[in-house]
Length: 242
Image (cartoon, rainbow, N blue to C red; front, top):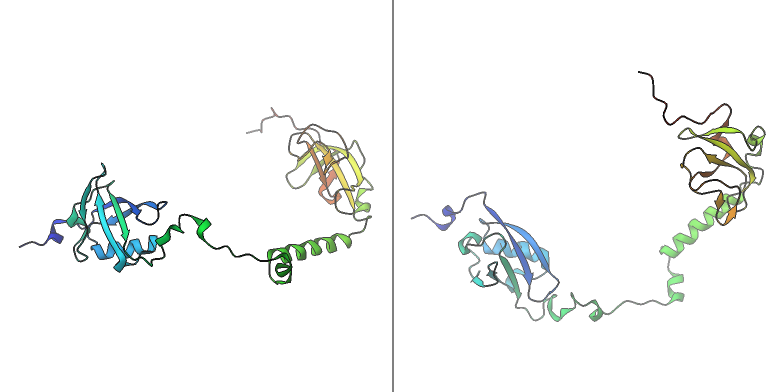
């Protein structure tokens, strides 16, 4: 006499929509092998929804919402109950002290929130606030070490109106500003109007206007990134020779 296991194709599997009696928001499409025992199905669901195997009852519903069967024998394969793709497997948690009971997994307002005063938080080490303060201090310290004459010598041959090329990217344009930028880090900066919209602004940086140019054609870079010389505007219709 052939057992029910032999009547189920070895590689057969289905997708069931899983719901939970205590968690209204829980709904998942999960694939199961028809060879799995009901106990194995419960083990898989326990890891998904938190209801233990011993506290779990399973009911199978068809795609029209009618109950097909109760999976009451843990030793039988899932395929014994003739589930089909799209059927719903409903988990019922019968443990009144279960972690899923009381509705708190659906309604977070029922969970007591941990609160800490500003004074106590400030005394803690390793917080995000302390890290942010530390990084801010390091940034300020780094800027304080840069003098106002930083890279001034590199600006000796850079004049407003010069054609230039900015690295990286070989972006070509014209010099529009040379000097100290109050809204940027200390040292000398070069303002460039790119031939194409490869920049970040129109010459206004952090609320201060250093020059005028079309939107997204302006850039403020350090002098060491700028080469002045014979850098004519590229012809957009120029084709490379084959």
